[in-house]
Length: 99
Image (tube, rainbow, N blue to C red; front, side):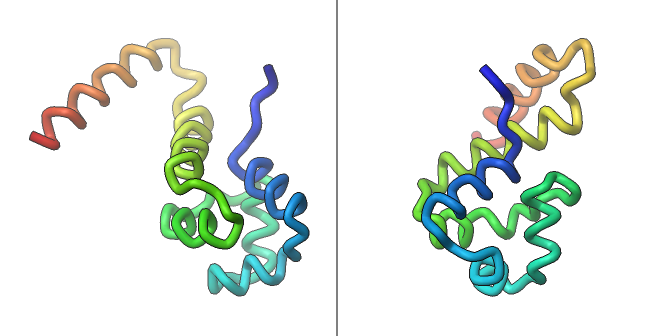
């Protein structure tokens, strides 16, 4: 199983539904070059893009957020040897914070 970046994920969907980069960028109110960099993995996507991206690309928001979070964790923390333990601790903190 190969790893798909968040940028690959949104580019694949955008191309599949034949939406030009410029239309998606305009919908997000960002430069075409900015979106292109996000798709190529040269710039991180803003969490503010997730809801509008899910809408224009016809994707489930939960799936978009899940892909975004997975990619962010992989990029920021994937090389740490105790990642799994850190994720478990973060999950506990999130559960505690919600109460």
